[in-house]
Amino acid sequence: MSRKRVLLTGVTGFLGSHTAIQLLNKGYEVIGTLRSSDRIKAIREVIAKHTANSHNLIFAEADLSDAAIWRELTKDIDYVQHIASPFPRTLPRHEDDLIVPARQGTLNVLKAAAANKVKRVVMVSSVAAVAYGKPKNERNKMFDEKDWTDEKNKKDTTPYLRSKAIAEKAAWAFMRQNNTQLELTTVLPGAILGTVLEEDFGTSANIVIKILDGSSPALPKIGFDIVDVRSVSDLLIRAMEIPQAAGNRYIASSGYLTFKEIALLLKQHYPNRKIPTVQLPNFAVRLFANFDHALKPVLIELDTKRKTDSSEAQRQLQWQPLSAQEAVLACAKSIFENGIIT
Image (tube, rainbow, N blue to C red; front, side):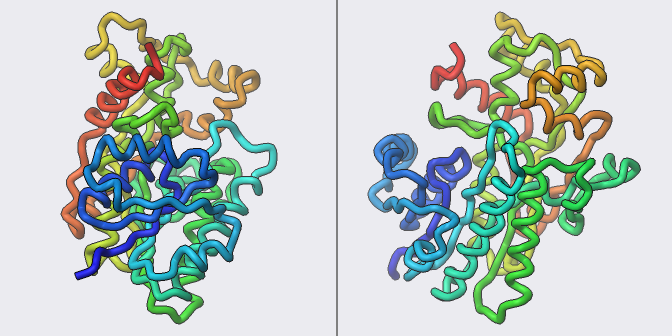
């Protein structure tokens, strides 16, 4: 039997590189896309440290906005893992700088996959596509896959959150409107922590870095659903391989932790580091956000506890995620090992 081929978008990213490693370890041939071929040597070396099968990994330079390249890259492909998506560390000047490439990139990949008779696309969405755009009285409920973010409610969304909802809605609309044999499954992670493989780390790792590096004297009273990157990769592959996953959404979360709970956990394991545990009053966070624009996106988390239910993935796909605490500690350990913090 010939080896199955998986096209994986965004292979240099935090989740992309972990998923490539797990696919290679399972015997797949992986075609990993990246925006610049300058990163090939470095990412190949990183991935080769974690698999004996890096010879089954090839790279392709591709931009999500280039429809023609995806037509070419999806030829003779069995599955697509669509992981690449814009996730800036600061808010863009214009929200369309995020929303348009996220939506159009997804459609370019789906159209090409359908045209070339790919069996299934697994798309990484986010809990951002289920738990936002809500009236105040609905923000603290337990969300599941039946829920959708209302991107028209701008009081309870940010450009990034809207981009995730709009891109996923566009993907499902494409599937409804086109008579195709292609299957689609979406996976919706919370904040992704876990083992950082290199200095080019995932944006969510900043949650742990900011607590450990001494740059935050106090903590905002907010929290997130957290999941380990290795568990998300595992779920992406289950969503690709298991027949009944076709046509479904799956939330990927290991539980909700506040900044304070994360800080207390880190303080317990790194007692000699100066780790903040004092919480800032909400008015102070709002005030600081006027000076530090990186804080702006977290303002909608104040006074809310948005939790999500990942039992569907556990029940249907026998997914067993690592704990949220393990995700935090693995992230911290790897941050020190990679010299991101000394």
